[in-house]
Amino acid sequence: MAKFVPQAELPVSEQAQIRRDKLAALQAEGRDPFLITKFDFNADSAAIKADYEGFEGKVVRVAGRLMSKRGQGKVMFCDLQDNTGRIQLFVKIDEMGEEEFARFKKNDIGDIVGCEGEVFKTKTGEISVRTSSIILLSKSLLPLPEKYHGLTDKEIRFRQRYVDLMVNPEVKRNFIVRSQFIKFMRKYLDDMNYIEVETPVLNTIAGGASARPFITHHNTLDIDMYMRIATELPLKRLIIGGMERVYEIGRIFT
Image 1 (cartoon, rainbow, N blue to C red):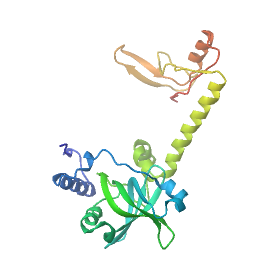
Image 2 (image 1 turned 45 degrees about the vertical axis):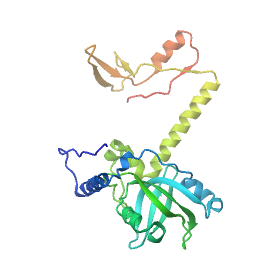
Image 3 (image 1 turned 90 degrees about the vertical axis):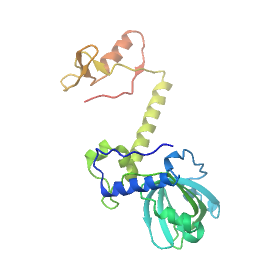
């Protein structure tokens, strides 16, 4: 059985250590979430909210990341974030049973869970899932950024895109729009009989007019090389070679 072994040489915050201790306890009980590799779900947050009348009263299986936990005692409300958005979970001890409810209360914000329950609306009109069972699918060993201040440091956002995507939903939209735009542009050019090509990313001479190039070193050839700033010259060479319509969607390093 695989065990999580913390790296002793790395400093661990108090919150992170608590989460690791929880994981170790789960593993000792034979409930290692990292050994669960599959959870079959049949609905997502967007579909449920878009067709509440069709889902009302039905039992669904949803999965996602816990983004918040509210309440205490015998009732809790949680926000579950999946691939399409967020939906509220209504968790009550009478619905789940004392043992499973007690296990759920130990889950942390950031954990990935699978849930089964009935779709309904709360007294405030919030579309929710009245949860009858919850299974921990993956343990979050590091706490998410603080809820109200969020993740605003640009350096961290760019270096840890996965965290940025978790807590800033608008970032995911940017990724989707970019993908859709590239898909559209590729189809547009393909329909005009252009041929997509790939040209070298590394060159032995600097290109791009007066732009300052990025320099790297090729260890095998023992020479300095330059990361491309423009694809103009390689594309022109292809045209000279007889490929009249060519294009490239590639990375430019400027």
